[in-house]
Image (cartoon, rainbow, N blue to C red; front, top):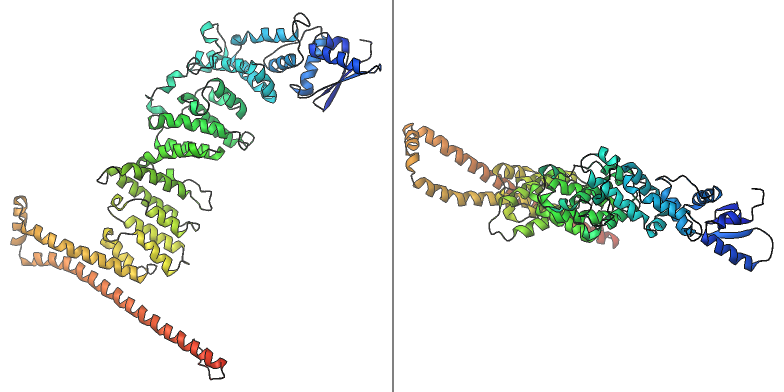
Length: 552
């Protein structure tokens, strides 16, 4: 073409293309209108200047359109450039009214053959929409591509090989946005195979779909009618969890706020099926994933309630979730879960086996978190006292955790150590644990005396009961008792001596602790007296009197 370029087109403020008016205006109705308006404004015979803002695809997209125009209305169409050319044709009004067999009609004809595309072709087309998602969404092309994508999935749910080769099936080529019509209605059934309980199974298309951006996945869920609280589909819920897990490993996908809506959608789906499709460990796995990308308070409460009701099925590893409030572990989460569980069990009058199981679990958890130097006294007490007393038949586990905490926090004051000991029910300690407590230098003396006194009172209570029991002879035990008595009084005295030795040892320990307390009180009084003398001596020295000698 020998004529000089008489049209300058500025694309999105970054690029300028020099073109011919006659060529471009013969295909574009919008350019034809804008050129006419510019000619009315100026009478100079210079090249006209046209500016486009937010042109789909930027300079690359407009260059493809220019090639189409300069090639007499021909351009190779493929799944990767279809969305770009279709949006550009809509933007520039390249319709049949302007020119026969224009770009828009060619692009729509290519779209009509969507069902004959392979799975990879459709996925490529959807991914190529992402740079100009708003424009392609407004044109309606994105919804058609998404519907075609899931038509491939439902037509071949088992393997991707058949999905890669499209076969004519008019019933599957519908672009309906209903989740039931695209083959996911079956997942809403509450009867779930056992293999799905751990929530680790994946469909063949999960990994391919993780290449799409978060806004595209959000659009997919909206097209299928399963976004937010409307999500009632187990397969799509599992896909979202798989996608979020992949996003946490790819920082480029994990932008602030972009994944929060998908996380909420996944939690709504999990809460719907609950324990029928997810084990307790699976729910903790879900919490770890959605917490990493952001979660609303409402959805977090819904998920934690579901986890709390199944707390008796949890293990120690499940509870050890990293904390974000200065501590090593998220203790607040465990307390909320225990609170949910206890409130659900309060209706039962007698302590259930589930409650005792949770009691043993919390004792193990206490022992694990005790060495944490960031764990405050109030937080330790809150965890230890989060369960009712009936949840524990024995408090040895609580005492062991308390001892570890005191050893890991040597700077605690006497008052703080005394306060910590209130979480132990001394009457439910075994004799061995009570002996260890009495000898423990980290335990305040007053607490040790109280524990030994509780053990002594328990023995005194049990002694009459044991005596009464011996007074009633069981016929089945008569031969054994006869044999023991026939063996001679020596054996009987051995048994009685063993029991009396235990009681005597406990009585001696109690006396030692009492004498230790008396000595400490006497030492405290002496120190107070010396302190008062020092204070008087200081006042005498200030008035010219003779001061007392310094105490070493």
